[in-house]
Every structure is written in structure tokens, then in C-alpha cells.
Image (tube, rainbow, N blue to C red):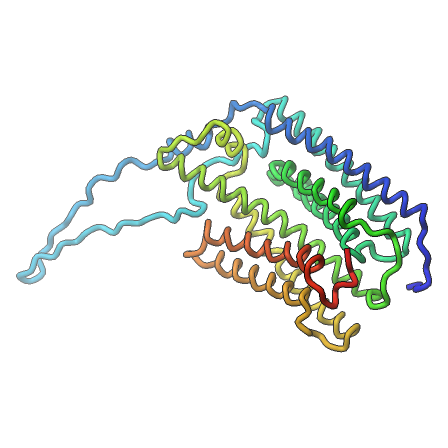
Length: 360
């Protein structure tokens, strides 16, 4: 790598223009997603209630008690009572993703996905020109990390759509988060395109940080699915108990996948990316050994990366244990993602350490 490389100001300016342009297109995608949710037909709302009513078991008759003789003693034999788990056992259909299944809602949804894809390509161009302007990896500071993180998060979403997954419901919270992320990047976190400090001139910058970004994007998808699972599970529980949720709650939550589907998606995403997060920590330790002479020094960034690893390990262990499926495991998953978020923002902004040169 050329340590004496200078900054190409034209490419740096082009990157900024592309980032702002992507924000404008993301805004169009936001309104299209909003139209999909608000203007799509509500004709399919109530399918969950109908399914729960149709599959609700009849009131059980009083269990028969059989009496048999054992010697001179009467022995009462009571039948065993089997109770189903509350996590992911309801036989309810998935919602349509966002729209209500009509042509108007689907049109808005397709427009939203198209705008999102266009914004992704423009933002990716901004990341690429940022990298070319300084001839290095485009994640040497918090501004660049934010740009790349939001790009990868949207790419993960588009990848799931390409795999025919029912994840269009993720579009609105994702685009909203991306707009907030980019708004923070271009205002508070903005850093002019420049060369890195010598400690960051390593091929491990490409390996370690890129895997951290990809893991964070996947953890984000898992966290959104987990959060919506909690709302949807409460909705299904209320319906199963004979309650009547409000019209707005029914209209929104009815369009989401079933609680069991959201729970399964969150678990699979977190479980799939956890080994890569383990590799991220190991790669960082190896890089630390090369740069600082020690593989582990309990630097704040190292410490919180490890805390995040422990939190997700506890979640996966709890999720595989019958007594911790469902809402308890979901809360633990959100705590784990909160640890990742603090490691992402809090450590860099509020805590000083050996990673402080990555700066804002």
C-alpha cells in the first residue's frame, strides 16, 4: 500500500454527491413503503383471528377417572394432561409481507423495492468512490463505517428478497434506519477523505472490519425481526385468549409474518452469523498482536466485542433450551444487539482506547 498516497478531491466530492443522492432516493423509498402499509387493502386483515378460531380446540370434557383394584386397594388412574408450548406453536398464516394482498398495495411495494435497490446502487457508488479517492478500504473512521454498514444492511435485505423470502415488511424499518444512519453520518460523524494513521495500514483492515460490518448488518436484521416478533406474539396471544386488539394494531400486525416465522428468521440469521462474529474477534486479536505486540489487552473495543459475543452465545444457548424459547430468548437477543450497538457507537464516541484513532 502506498503510504504517501494523496487524496483525490474530485473522487471525494463525487462520493459526497452520491451519498446525498442516495439519501434522496431512500426518501422516495420511504414514502413508497409508507404508502404500501397505509394504502394497501385491509381486506385480508383478520386472517389470524379466523385461523385461531378455526383451529381452537373444543372445550375438553372432564377427564375420566378409572378405578382398578390392586389387592384390596382402589387405585385412581387419571389421564395425563399435555400442555403445548406457547412459543411458535400456533397454526396461523403469515401476513402478506406489508400490503394487504391487493394490486394497489403490491404496486407501492414494488415501487418501494425498486427505489431501495436504486438507492443501494448509488450509495455503493459513494462507498466505492470514497475508497478510490484515498486508495484504501472505505471504513477507516466512523463516517465511512456508517456508510458501508448501511450499504451492507440494505444489500442483505435485497439478498433475502432475491431468495424469495417474505421480508418486504423489513423495508420500512430498514429504510427509516438507513436515513437516520446517513443523516448522522453526514452531519455529526462526517470526516474529510484522508489517509489513515500508520497502525491502520494493514491487510487486516480489509478482513477484520469488513466482517464486523457484515455481522452488524445481519445482527440488525435479526434484531428487527425479534422486535416485531414480540409485538406479533402479543397480538396472537391476545386473539387466542378472546381479546380484541385495536383496529390500527390489527391492520399493521396482521400484515406481518406469523410470530413463529419471525422467531425462526431471527434465530437463523443470528445463528448463521455468530461464527463469523467469532472470526471477527479472532482476526482483531491477530491484528492487535501485529500492531501492538499483544493479542489481547482488554481495550474497550475488544472488551465490548467479547461482551457482545457472550451475549449472543447466551442467546443461542437459551434459544436451544426448551424453557427459554419465545419471549425470554427474544429479550436476550435484543440485549445482545444493544451490546453490539454500544460497541458500534458508544465505545467510539464516549470511551477512549487504542481504537480511538478510528475517530469520528
